[in-house]
Amino acid sequence: MELVSPFMLAYSYFKAPLASEVTPPLSLEHPSTLLAVLFLLHYLNRALISPLRTPSRSKSHVSVILSGLIFNLLNGSLMGTYLSSPDAQHFLADAFSRPLFWTGIGLWALGLAGNILHDEILLNIRRNAKAKGKAKARGGDDNGKRKSNQEHYAVPHGYLYHFISYPNYFCEWCEWLGFALAAAPPPSFESFAQLLETLHPPYAFVFLEVVLMLPRAYRGHKWYHSRFPDYPPERRAVIPFLF
Image (cartoon, rainbow, N blue to C red; front, top):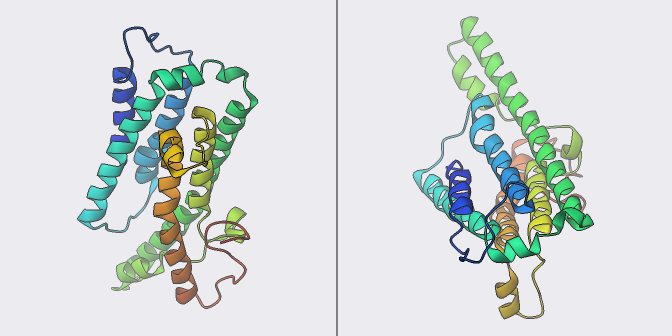
């Protein structure tokens, strides 16, 4: 369901629906093209590489899949439209000389690396559980498969898991916040009307990700505590030391 996002970004970026006849043509050397490539790299990992490396995946309700498709369809379209727009081309014209642009790119890279790193810890838990289930099945245990399904949940450890239950969520927020810092001027909070007027798609994406993923992280954090009596009590849900 995430695969539609990079396709829609690429289509919208090259289609450039907001460009006019006097708008300069898109250039491969323009900062907006670099940002489009970074967006595609994220979804290359998320939509293609990560699913292929996952030993098992939980079933999703059709409503979850449909809502995910709609969200990614809109997000990819809006992001490509924004990056190819005259406003973005003007804002990013001298971006390579701005420290904030490279700070945002660095934060994006750290967020992506952290996301992959902490996802790998979860994947290793599933791989180990799957290996144990196969070993039990080969040993004549008729319940090997069922036990494997039960055992693929465990308490993850290492890196930001020392502080929070969902570091992959936190790292993804950092990733897209860095992207927004590099790609668009920050929104104005002087009034709600100005906020809506100046909330460009990169910042809107960060806001929606937090709104959608924060309750999920909180419920998952509570589930960990109910499932594992020895779950580390000092861990927060998704923001180190705060929440």
